[in-house]
Length: 241
Image 1 (cartoon, rainbow, N blue to C red):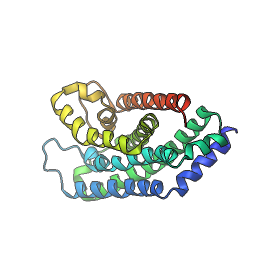
Image 2: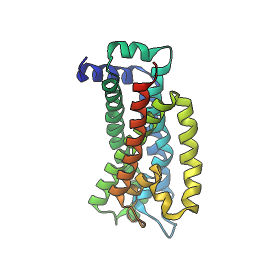
Image 3: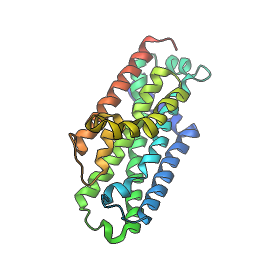
Image 4: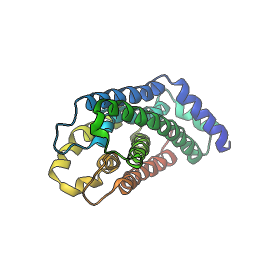
């Protein structure tokens, strides 16, 4: 089978597995809601960053992106679904590439819509406090947010292919992002800038200090994601279905 039918089949799975569109809808709703609340809270913090405040809903919203990537892959390991998939697409590398593409495209598109909506509603609440944001900074924030969400979903997908369990992936990544990364970030200084979530989130800030900038931070997250996907591809090729 060529890549086009494999892509079509994976896209049908994304559309028809109810939890996957639900995860993308949750990504949009949670991110937009939390950004609206952050914008309404105002700018009393002396280190106020209007761009990060407007896009801060991504911090809880990324859990939905992680869930989307994890569930899209873990569904293949339920009820012998992977054996049926590989019977239709015997080339395991081709199937995995189609799966990754089917995860990346909707995650990126929903990420763009979500980031734009979050920025819009938060700016309405911030009012004049957001007047210092340039068009270029806002575009960079929206694009960086969307790319980050796509990368974090793919990172979860690659890890799930290795662990063969969405529950195991969520049990590792969600505590890491919500607890471990936060604690390390306070204690480890610039070393924390190279963690997969911290590095990508630099793109959400108007101003930033440290070793990495917005695009180099996203590049670090992309390297983490590439490593996870390569490990996942190796697992798919080498292990029994």
